[in-house]
Image 1 (cartoon, rainbow, N blue to C red):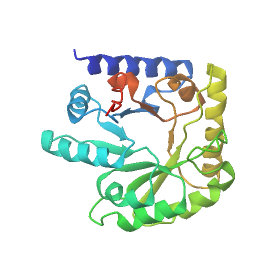
Image 2: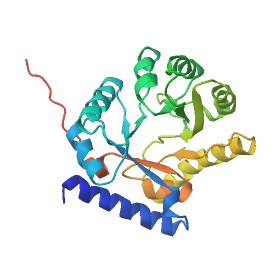
Image 3: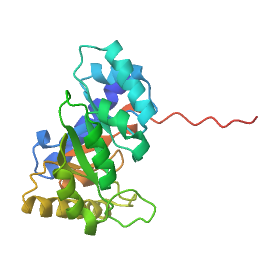
Length: 238
């Protein structure tokens, strides 16, 4: 068993226990393996262990990896999610290469993705990133601006609005973590009460997935728990 295979097994067990404690069916929560900074070979190892959905934070790295996997595993049904902050000048390769974008937080980005999505591809699946704890320097639409943005994005062609994503600040204990995630769940439920038909609430990572599941997450994004610690950045001394 490879390290990645063992790690995936452990994360799946954590999800199983978290769902049991929350009295939820384990099939209601999917796992997105965050492969940023790890190479295509690492993705292949995760794929061999049954993981098919992968998240990338950086556009160039992600598109290069998508291209590499098409060569290495042309038979594999992979699903690629862009989960990092997206600048308007980087939207085209995302629209052309990825299956999902979870980090839409303003209408301009959504409009560019809609215009640039190739007509021969399925609609781009979209989540709106919401800033649930008010961090001034964080990405995400404010809770107050969410409903207006959701309505505008839902009307765009070539996109399908699936739900919300959030990345709250790290919290010291389970209940505090759960409370932050519940803010997103309330917003998610409010949008559905307005007829939005959302099915995806992407929240929870390696350190807080249990609290996210307890709050209603339908997708957890796990990087370190699957692939291990990220390689240290090399600082030039020249």
